[in-house]
Picture 1 (cartoon, rainbow, N blue to C red):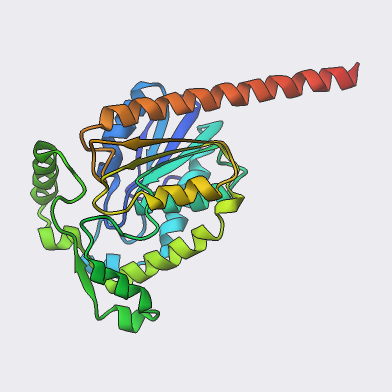
Picture 2: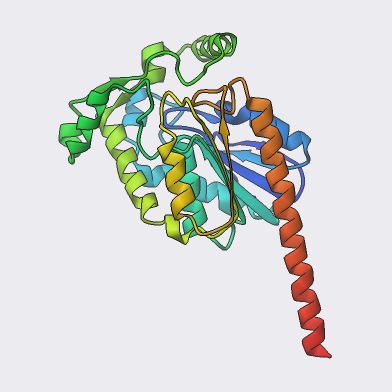
Length: 285
């Protein structure tokens, strides 16, 4: 079995990261963080979720279960190269990663999520958007279309221009990049509901990053994780970034702290393994 089509792989050591992009995005969102972690010696895998990277119609007709299958297939393949796997992602990709942590405990040893989003409720989201929560069917949801507005999750003007230039240089229209249909958002809502019910099953150590001024998802999204997850949780609140923390002004801090989390996790696993070995020796004696 090989990685799913569109997956980017940076080969490194036996401690690896599986990082999921956001809703409607691509692995390029995670590339800076991936390269930083790879330089620190880690294998990093960036899957392309099903329905993404193609036409707007393909994206609209994809299902949340298919997004999760993309992550599961990449995880199963990654297990051949890594002994310790940390799953993570940005925004909606963080929610997909959390589901992996809950359902695939056999392969997931840690979690690292960035601007986790259970529902878009940041300061740039119109309040009328909350009315969409009343929609319960795909037919009705298909009547709605939502367009993301500036600052597009990036506080730094120069970085925002570079990102937008890069995205549009591939031939895509801004409307295609930043528009979400109601059908897609309903799928995302169903995903978030499924994962919320599983948060108490996540016992692995976790690292949570969220900006205080998130334009897309309020800090309450991260607080939900801190309250409900059962494992050890490290968290940082960023003071000079918007939603896309892996690209914005504090991206270097995010990368450094993520690598430090991996080092701590590796040390904890080694200590636990050594303790178990000595217990086995003692019983054998």
